[in-house]
Image (cartoon, rainbow, N blue to C red; front, side, top):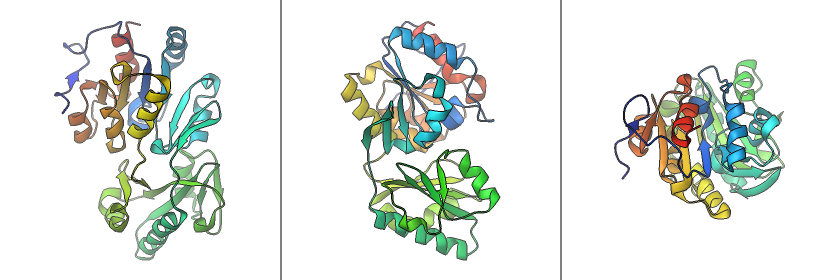
Amino acid sequence: MPATPTPLRDTPGPPAGPADIRLIVTDMDGTLLDDAQRIPDGLWPMLAELRRRGVLFSPASGRQYATLARQFAEVAEGMVFIAENGTYVVRDGVELSSDPMDKAVAAGVVRTVRRLVADGVDVGAVVCGKRSAYVERTDEAFLADVRKYYAELRIVEDITAVDDEVIKVALIDFGSAAHSTAPALAEFAATHQVVVSSEHWVDVMNRTANKGTALRGLQRALGITPAQTMVFGDYLNDLEMLDAAEWSFAMAGAHPEVVRRARHLAPSNNEGGVLRTISRVLGL
């Protein structure tokens, strides 16, 4: 069990650098991005210095690979993207690992969402494939939120019949995902993961799929140990990857379970907590 998180502010915490870190993995929303979903300006020169030192920087997100690749387009060469909550890992356009779902299960999740909608719940489904994400709900309020996370998005008549490898079904509940949509998916929780990834989003994936599984596979492939890995997260879909790193940080204001599982506490996403922590630990 990890120790009580140690704040990384002006109080004693992890030793200031240099540390033998070879891999840095960070969640995006609520972690690297501020609440306006902006990447800190200071990240770009930091990435150049990390590359010079041979440290691999890897975004790990529920976001789509195409979206992450677009956000980091200028520096994407050689970067590993842990996308779709670990179900799809890509480097330089080449798949490193994936964990596709049975299409029959994905279709069952979609039918559950349709029943919720019929009962008056304001929820919509996104079927996430390797090539694109797919939706059948077309109102602008729904599409505006979905487009934030899915750069490759197709509107189709029936999302249970897409011609793609399905790696995840994401559901956006405009009320409370934890109280409305997640309980309705209880039948799938017996065989699959039903993960509340934020206040309004729920992801359904294979039981074997998570950011931690993806990270451990990447560590094995690169010969990098947990002691050489630094990880940042703020919500429940980050728990497993926090367990895969000795330098694990919960952001200030993170979900209480994330704070409990992480070894250390970083400043909040609105205070540039990821960059400040990297700077201190690596002595930048």
